[in-house]
Length: 185
Image: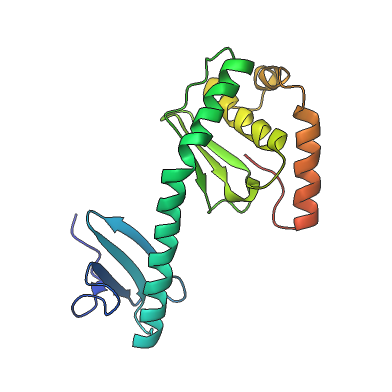
């Protein structure tokens, strides 16, 4: 399918970085997003944005992508090791995720799991919480690899973790105090 006709690249490479392609969209009003495409970065911005705003947003989006990539290289292998250890200890090693990673786009969830492809995503909001809470969130998502719903079989799997109720209580209180979101998954 052809590229969206409403998005068009800005004239030439970005003033910030020649490996950056800026695409302006008349349909985009306030949001800015960016992603890597091969060896370049594509930044999507509203068409009415000034050159100065464009430069500021390109720099901000490059920094955000760099932080995300550094975090995934340094910290995610440890998160995956932790998940596998928890699976071995509490689930008999049956839950084997393909990937486990931190994400910053889950304002209303502590974690999420896609059983079809074996991926687990843990919200950045869990960083810095007590280890038993992180372990519970990881186990919760690992259990979804085995049972995709929240039925009795799912909760029976989590009964093996002795701090399930304590962690759930912590997350409920934390969400209320933070007023960011109620727990969903």
